[in-house]
Length: 214
Image (cartoon, rainbow, N blue to C red; front, side, top):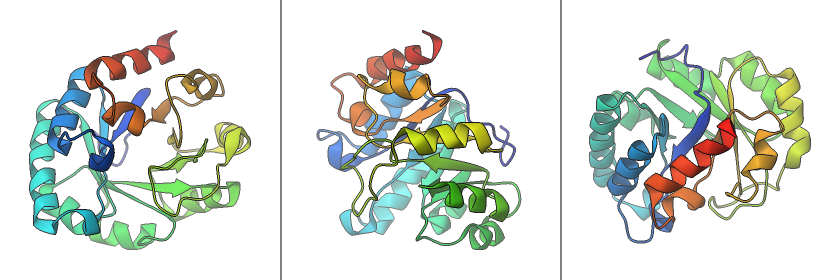
């Protein structure tokens, strides 16, 4: 599997969110995501909501599952756990450890993603060596706490025209509006609650991926 040279595959980028998973565990959700054809999965969990040893255990299991099915495994924020389980990379936000510090910890061969919300942050992300960026939130979202205001399509369209690294569009994207995001040039798109809260996660992922081939 290509690590730092990863080009995000076209399609759905999966993120765990046990709080919104209707009683299912992160492990169950990831299993269904993989069955649906997702090729990139990010583990995102808040330490105050789950014991750190449980987070490590879950990530060890997900690492085994993703490796077996050749799925890229990214861990949100927890650089230490990413190292312990040999994840493919880490995703950080604007207020987390800076990319250059994460790079020193992870080494040259791991993937580092960075959330961005403006053209200035996009350019900075490229300068500091992020391998890909998150772009959004496109729409209003309740999935993350203390999230910034929606960036709308203006920022997405700017990124499509100016970015030199892969990006994933994220934030409030649903089945009913994913076509609007796709037609503006996004080739990798993240939906959180629409997937983890679905009655049938596998079929939902398949349906969403069809938006890219329609």
